[in-house]
Length: 178
Ligand SMILES: [Zn+2]
Image (cartoon, rainbow, N blue to C red):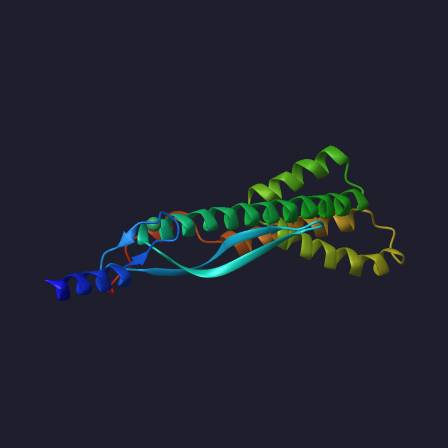
């Protein structure tokens, strides 16, 4: 009887505990390890954060993973928008520089963003602008940069969407590979 009590105690000691919900995990249950901030030491100037490898149950680990993913997505989305705004300003400036009226420049810039070709158009226009800078001094043709800008935008649209009709992709492939 005494031996049995000792044995039970040992089993209890071996049970892992979820750091988050403090639940004891039954033997055989999946235990996840994760680096978590376990304590914050408030200092006079800054806070010292302590990270430790802790054991979590699957439910808590999934919840933490989901929360971290959401935070990363939010940061990623913010970065994408910062990039878009910078890109829009840059493209707008180029259009304005080649003599387009501001309202048209803004409309075209928004259009580029809408079609998802703002980034590549910006690069194309920027390269064209820099090569034109030198050639513009020799030529008086003002229509040239505008034409070039339109050609670049059309080229970017083609590289993104291609010449093919979209519905052709839905047609079953002849011969049937599968
Ligand atoms: Zn838990």
